[in-house]
Image (tube, rainbow, N blue to C red; front, top):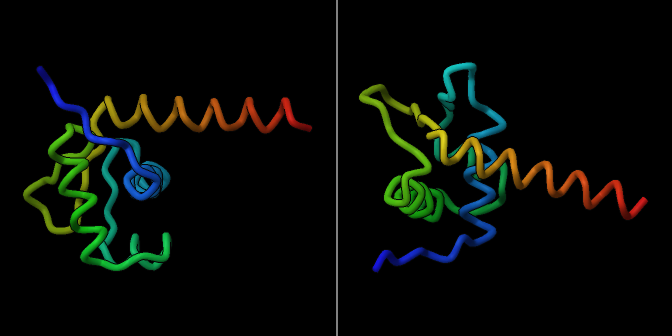
Length: 93
């Protein structure tokens, strides 16, 4: 049986940051310090969250320094969550 980790706000915040900073090849070239500063958490926490995202197949690291590749699973997940949030916001107006 496959165990699914709880998708915490912190994990989503990191994934969304990478999504928002990706290029046309789905590669985000950012430092863990940049992510930490942006979402107001520590760099060691970012490191842990990125490790979890890699283990769950949302992010891959390349052989190049500071490159994170978002998988199709990550792209679909974040874009779906953003669309849901947008629709919810529009219905509350």
